[in-house]
Amino acid sequence: MRRSPDARPIRHNGCERVTEVSGNDLHVLTSPYSGAFTFRCTHCAKPDYISGFAWADTGEDLVAYRKRVETFTPPLVWFFREGVALVLAVVLGVLTWVFVRDSFKDVDFLIWYCIAGRARPGPVVPDRRSCRPAACRWSTGSR
Image (cartoon, rainbow, N blue to C red):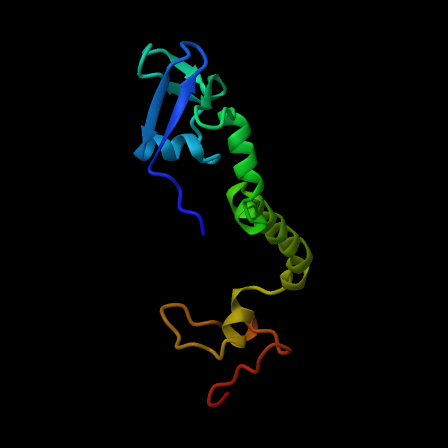
């Protein structure tokens, strides 16, 4: 695997001077996902869009370089980075709720109380008539 360089020379198209970029600045310039759109030239001290800079050793424009690097991104990384997975999860959650909600329309708290095996009664003890016979048998002595 090729090791990325620690420093690389860039040329500002505005002043035509070359600067060597390293460290975090190099990472920001090379990563298509950094979110940086401007960069400041160290010679003329003017900020310019990334499209105003090019690699001095190859002559490739930084925007073209970023697009080229982005094409090597694995689909799964792109899927999560672009937020597609989040949108898909929300859509699946809504669809599940739409199709399943009718199944639980007639179920109320006391039915769940009966189905769950009649948890120990707290301050509210359900009345025998409040439990539907199909869901559970409410008896005084045994389950």
